[in-house]
Length: 124
Image 1 (cartoon, rainbow, N blue to C red):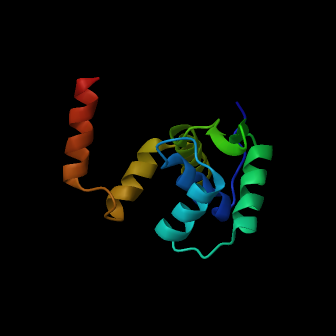
Image 2 (image 1 turned 90 degrees about the vertical axis):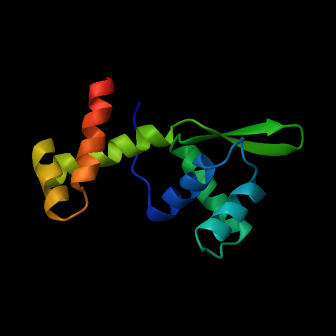
């Protein structure tokens, strides 16, 4: 499955959809984007981003009677995995240890975080 890169605005719209507990309609997406992400986007703007996300195969437009909903085709987890793999590949030359060391050096990953990861790994 090919996962295309998203613009920042497309990411916001997709995050709003991923956070929905049902297949959203346009008004659901507008409400979440404007309310949760501090945008002031008009319906036409959100519709444009939704159309782009359909073209990029992130969403499928589904007709339910007179109502159109958006079905997720690429999960948030799959997208996030693509992002961090690209980051590690580009910035750390595919060296996960260098990535983790950088996070520790920057204070983004604490000893408590490492202990929690270690416990999670033990459970696998």
